[in-house]
Length: 264
Image (cartoon, rainbow, N blue to C red; front, side, top):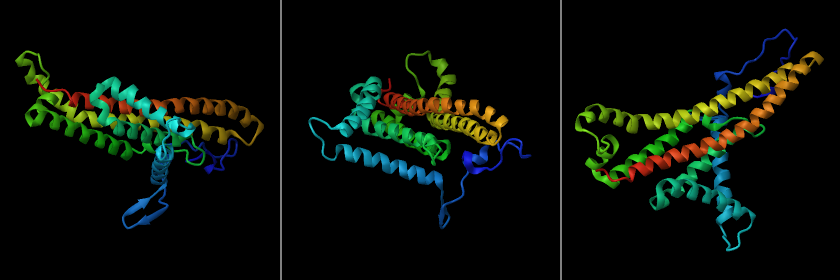
């Protein structure tokens, strides 16, 4: 839902069109068999194309003295490489830098659609996208765990912390299994989804309220503070969008760091 999708205004005998779950549902643009292509999928494809185009343009002809585009791309890559991979995983994190960079920029761009005019929708507020990203992280996490430690060692890595009295493992092992194997992809999904869903809902509320209260002098006086709050929330949402992308890759790096630890 966008603010201009309603002609209803205050004092016009019509109720306030409050945003709700239906604000996250879109009619298909076109259908191919059982597959419906809607606005969310379009934004995801456009975002992916923008990321690929940006990095291709930046690194297609790299120079020793980088131009502006290459400098920005290198700064973004180096931020994830040094600030996340090396900081959390050390030298072992080097092979995973491309994955972490890809996840960071994909999540960030999918989030930032929320404040782009005419797009105005964060792709990650549709739970399927965070769920697929979390599944990619989980599969990588499990693969690295068992590749590094073998099957028995991988089970011990996931479920059996070292250095504890043996009777404690009766209780702790199931808890560790549930936390590391089942709960982690769920929390990774919900954390990103819930933040983007709630943020978008708040933005819609104040933008819709601004539009709803326009049309009369009395209503316009109420619309001004609603518009100011919408601007403040937009700035705050920009911060949250980047923060959630950062948190997602930090958690991914933490999981991979644990997977690379040898079981004892």
